[in-house]
Length: 595
Image (cartoon, rainbow, N blue to C red; front, side):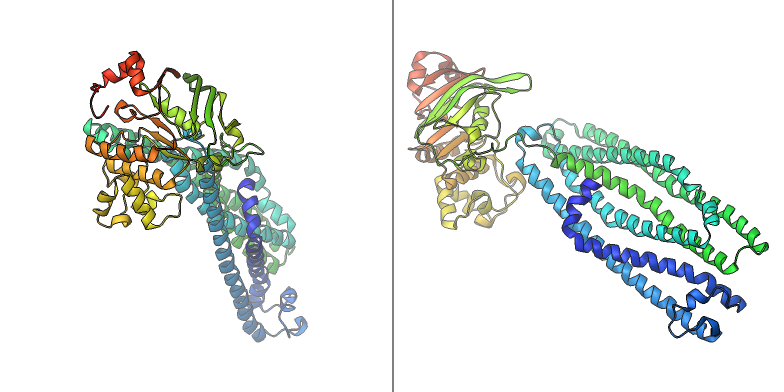
């Protein structure tokens, strides 16, 4: 809770201070009710002014020696009304202020969580489930909000009231107070154990919610495969099993939370019963003033409810703590890709980008093995090879979304790790193998990260042979493409991604299977646009289809993480080596237009 509250509540100190002052007013007015009740009830029922003096002194114009019954009957309702108004205003202000603090803290947490998320590299997120991450933004933040808005203010409000009323009890009679409340410290150990169990169950419950969210995300994303393979029943069974596991955890949580409040109440009532028996005996012997006894009993009556409330809000409080821990797990994740001290910006490529003895491993598998490669300024180089040869890894290392395990990559002799990340990525435009479009308009997707006019966007779409189909969409550039571009075909999505790269006009271009999702007709159109785009530009073209790389300045063949051949298209065909084997496997006729 210190980690959760300290850095955030410090920003809203005035609101917290106002809220705490209101809590003191609440506690003081509640104690005032209890303190006034004994002498007043005794006076009103017996007419005996004994013990009424301290109360009367608070009422202006009253003399305890000459107090009049009628005056008291008029003044008491007025005093009680004033206390009620003060209590009501204090509660309202405290509720609103702490509610706003809760909302502001949750906003700050949400921003910190998202800020860390976008800093993490793909490899940092590789072991995280999407559904579980979404749960941190959903159920976990909701639990924190509920805890800060409900549990923490209730603990503060009711806790201060309990302290104030307990202090009044001891002022009235310390012996009765020891009899009534002396047994409560004995409950500290079992309640502490109960709290730890409840926190553990709460955390397990949030993890279960994350797994449920992941199952939903996985099923929705792969619904075609699920239905095509007749696995809907299995998916339903997995979901039901996890749902039952979640229900079992909730049952444990409810039992633990339900036990705390009645246990506290039973202990309190038991102590009070003993104290009351003792008090009645003392009254019978004339050793205790009736007015003090009435005040004591009124104080105890007012004490029970806030004490019970403390037990009730404990579950929400511990749920918030468990959820906060899960949120901080993400916030505390250190990005593996960060700028080194003194990292500097770059401006394009003057000579070459070089891979020098680069090694990269994915788990136990070596993807690149002492890989040497050069991409010179103005050169278009194609990387080809079988699946798993390491082609996409080279693109990821060049754009620094991954780090090599050995060796280094340089731009004009400067290690990429000494280059500011933001500057590096401004120099590189990427068209990835898996096209990602956002649930936004065509305009926003093409101009992603840029300020561009409609004319510039249309020019990029025209160059990518995408303008015709975009203008045929219902709202043209303002058409929302849906989640991951679901309203478009694969070829249309790919051409929008190419238009995005064209508009960026970065010095270095990386095409990772940029035409893989296109049909033959679309491929010819886009290939012509790409050839014009690539002219005079530094570009790395990663391709599985050899038909797309004939015009490259140099073609490098990757096998098992190393370059085994390189040269131009015709040269490599004539050698009859690895490139020729790939060429023949794809059934490309040597003299065909595609080749």
